Image 1 (cartoon, helix red, strand yellow):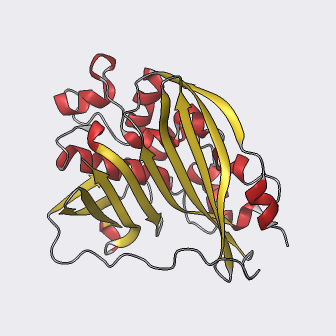
Image 2 (tube, one colour; image 1 turned 30 degrees about the vertical axis):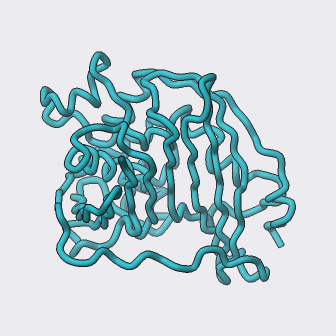
Length: 285
């Protein structure tokens, strides 16, 4: 059995120092499509160092994502084929606002292993703290095809009911043709998002956009339209990756406002709203 569950869960966490500065934050925001129109005061909060705030989803790339998913997949007790690995979901929990520049320690471990029959799910947890205390926690849910069936805990099996009624807001966000090329400079160098030949080998007719880029674009839309542009109001942000989106397409983001949270669905507008993100929730103050 390639995944030794007991060994994986008992493995010592791995820690690494990470640093970031305003250039990293600005590059990340630009990779999400920020800065259009370039002189819009609301967009300058994402692009101009003298006014800069940090979108909480920056937590997924700070320090180039160190220790990161690849590090987690090389933990003791885990021996899997990366070709069978899918990023199934992502949750970021904020303990306080992310500073524009920082130096912190990221500690990663395998928090859970679930048996879904035909696949295993690894929950890779990264806790980040600086000298003042905890900053954020990242949970990446990783599907490993063909590694289930070992008789383990199936994990949470209930999914939330789809939002009822018409959305409170619907917005569209265009994806530039070169957006994946810019976003990958924040640390995800997977050639699937840049190399047409590699994308064909993976079964796609052209490179696809990073799921975490869609994740960040969606959070920016919520902050800008529902939270009054105040990134400090975000407490957590969770999603499940349901499908691919291509550079040059348009995201259609539907939002339902509830007490203390916003629920979203995200689809590809030009493909009959083919699902891209589902089970997507921002918890906020």
